[in-house]
Image (cartoon, rainbow, N blue to C red):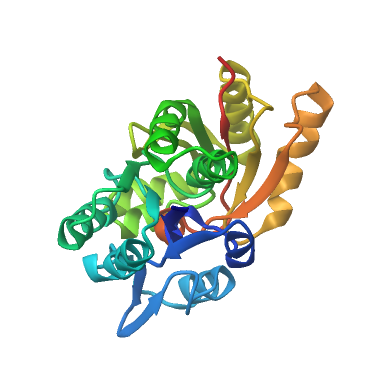
Length: 281
């Protein structure tokens, strides 16, 4: 009886990496006006940001249907395999609910669904941990239990470059966004209790990055786990943060890079940068 690891495209996995690690990825639907896409499958991150900058209407993401999960669950059932599904935070999407409905439809008990309470590379860290435990021979129930223990230590901090997409999504009024743009206000956000929260508002990118570095110092990185530099459309934004961390001797030792896809990019827009990691306790 094998263990299958499953996630959704809000994890922002490179599909080649996911395939190599034997991770099944269920894509989130993305709508741009009258055009429909599947995140990471028929819509790459590069094309997503190109459309985001070109089009005036805001895209929308929705949860996969129960049928999208049911196909994976039925295949596992037919093979007699167990499933661990690590999914986008239930506070951000109905993806978790779709998977739970699919499990009930499948009528197969060895399916363990984990609410990551996270997104993007925060999910990747948990999925990679699940893969490591699977490869060590642990059964699905124990893997899900260990992932549940770890998820409370996931930390995500990011700096947003533009307020336009928070305005489009209704999180800011036009007046607030306009004033913020004039004053070069740059929010510092986190994913807390599964939801996106604004922690600080700094005047200018340099000040916002300084605030984020303070947060990284208060919540130090556990180098037993991989860490990720997050970016939306521009990887070169790493130059605003990583050299500073290197100078301080706090650059994570197991650092990877992760482009934020439609699930988060829809709300924060281009130019964002951040870090996702496990906090050392």
